[in-house]
Image 1 (tube, helix red, strand yellow):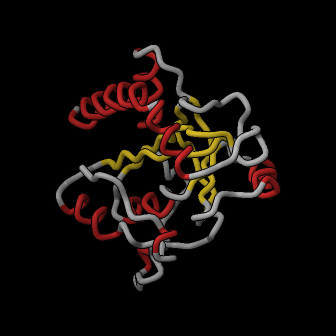
Image 2: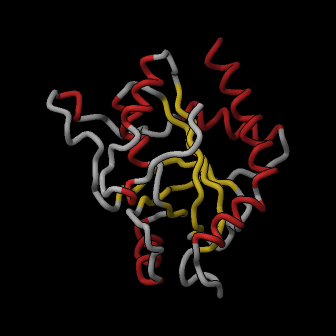
Length: 199
């Protein structure tokens, strides 16, 4: 329902998507399905492939809930990415014959790309992918009572993991190259979620 997002690196604030996501919740939406472009920290996860996010690292330690004053701001994030929805997504991917990785997504503020040293740190922290979005939206969605499912399209290998120069143009090209397969999988996943949520 939402085409794109405003990133925190555009303003330095993490709550840019609060109004849109809370409007979806008020309209009766039960689950937020997110997509993003990400760099791979796993040599076995190549550009053009998809990763289901199982958990995240909020590296900037920014929260979109700073303006909240009630105790509701203390949101439990222990199952931020709904386990049942992830299982449905994996089953849909299997039926579609498409591989679907699963792992931890590290959120960095950007807009600059990471250094090789930062990537080594993120790998040591247990991340499999890195990007500049998704985590603030997940926090907002959980605060609004939505279930969350998120998929990363791997558009490039992270800094120091391949002999390539990182650029926004390369990210866009990587997204375009993998878009057909990603759309097919996303359609299968959304159909499975739709049936489950209506049951």
